[in-house]
Image (cartoon, one colour):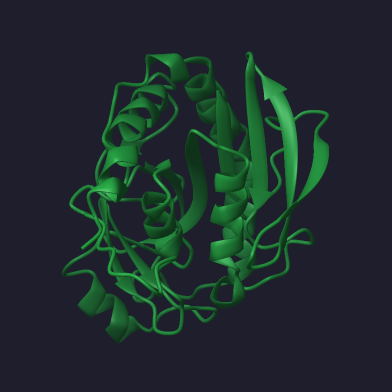
Length: 254
């Protein structure tokens, strides 16, 4: 099986001895690292670019997802850092979101600019892939896992204000800057997509101050666990239940 992994950090514990491939897309070239693990081909993209320096509002989400599509990926595991807007969700916890709210303003949201295609987003994250991630998180006793959560996607690159978090927390649980439009674009090309979110801080107003380097520090400590979860999911990928992700786009045209 061909498995895509997209993250804002390199994952050397998972992507071992990779080959690099430059994939041409109509949107831009994308560097993809290809590795083998447990009989599967892993295709890794750093969503922030080859040098990891592209800010969230400038990421070429279309080129990243199209590169996966051009490589005929079967499913995508997305990894991202988030802030918590709920006191019950703590730093170092893991969240597998089941839904999202899009608060971005400038991003191109779709591949379909010249036709009327309206994909169903009732279950935007692949339910079967989510179930697999949840089960593998639960096998690791040191993980606190939240099996559901609403992801609020903001434009970035700035962090949110206290007042914004007060509003957002009424409808969402965690806040990040990268899941949208990734999850939408994956659905539009019929690729299963699920997100493993690592809570690295409490959102504005729930802790005294927010230093961006603290986010990287917390993730760095948890990266081995993230890799372990994904490795276990890859081992068990053949146990993934059937889903409708590929079928949904075929029913979306008017």
